[in-house]
Image 1 (cartoon, rainbow, N blue to C red):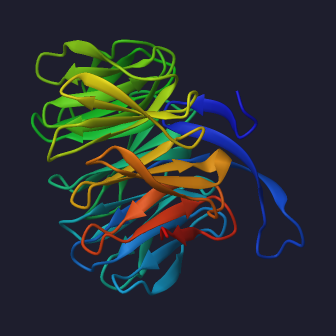
Image 2 (image 1 turned 180 degrees about the horizontal axis):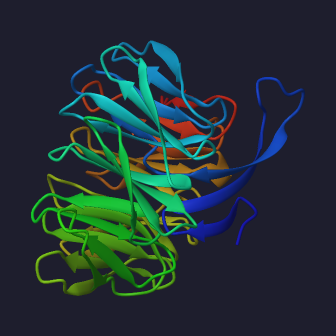
Length: 348
């Protein structure tokens, strides 16, 4: 295992990099949790929000490309938006809290305490509730959107949270398990569903199917959320992030150990060589582009999804672990762990 990826806990990864803080004279080692939910786009405002881990802030990029910053709590790592209420929720991993931001005014409306060190987050827009997992804790913090009051449910730790609107269920899973937990938010009852293998990393839900990657099995699992059956689909070595095309149904899987992306076209696999140690995927389906972040290599690879050829590689980001996308302008930005919180992606 590499120095940068010292530990993998499902969606949660611990990375040691030399990060230069604004007040530092030289780069200082920083151990950072990273979460692929590092950016969110608002259709209402046209703003793109990116977490800025090093500066305890959220970067705001307008559709014109202008940028500003909102100060939040300590070590923000994830962000979600309730598109119905216009409230933005930022996980402050170092502050044991969630910052609540108004999408219209960019004002911090509240800071909500969590049960322990928060990590994963998901919003149930229909119910106006926010679910936050707590690292090394069995408590799931539930935030009521209308009041910002909380309830802590002892349902187990989670590295990823997925909301399934029909039936209305909350799905939680983590690296150290071969099952996913399905929570009924109305009753608090939980059910364990098979995931197909031990060590789960990434996830993507498409309709009634939840795809999860099996880090040690060269495969991903397709879980039928109605029948609770699971089938295995082929992938490369140490599959992690997953992205699914809504137009073609193709599934893209980043394989950390062999530096490839597996493309599953109706179950038929093909493999594409990319930059070493890929860990983040963002798909611009309308533009036919797939962005692949490799924080260890300081690189972002851009793939043409129609031809499955690499269009180019950006080699100047500072440990990019995710890619933020404005789906209207199709502008893309690397979300960095380094001193520069983001890097605009431009290819020659």
